[in-house]
Length: 258
Image (cartoon, rainbow, N blue to C red; front, side, top):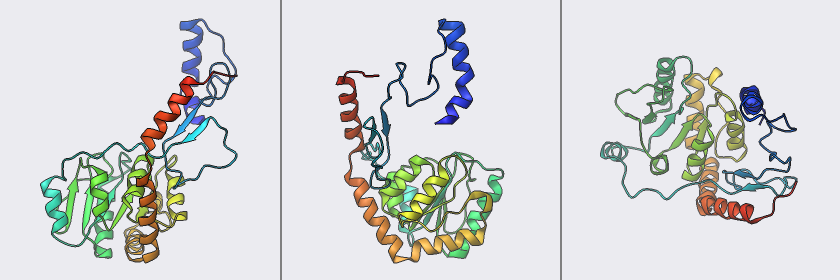
């Protein structure tokens, strides 16, 4: 919550004073406060099955579940479907928009980890985190629906971004989380505590041998597979979009109090 204030606080102050002629006000950079200093409503778009709501949270905070829209009717692209049908379930590795310092090195590391673990590989490329590559048992994808792809994976290796975590949790597949920055270490630890992933593999310490060991653990431990499947069932049973809409309707209808 402090990051937006640190980045944009002075800009907002100048805009209020120079453009709008408004004085500074208490809590002006706090996203949890309304302009009248009352509590602002907060909608958390993650699953209470993943992170149960603490008992001391105020009533203004709503944990709705993931905002997952209905899946499109289109099947996976033919080349992806062909790859999936050509062998054992592969491991997906993708780091989203987290480019890292050396995408080429990261790609080589991932390829070596898959080789050591004896797994076919789907690389999520296109954002800079990993480069597109070709090889036996390797497929690179740039735009593909994670909701359709992840359930076919032996495990999902990712950076721990909140959205990717949601898709991975919903898929019911084991995970390996390799966090970079911000909230990603939190989600990595949470996946570990929920039993759906081995211990986090931070990017700054990532090695091919370490990633291979984590992939092997995720894909061979029956307890991890069972926990991931059960959590996926709970996440998919939720309707976060409807819960969010209902919460917003109640917020809009309620009188505003300080």
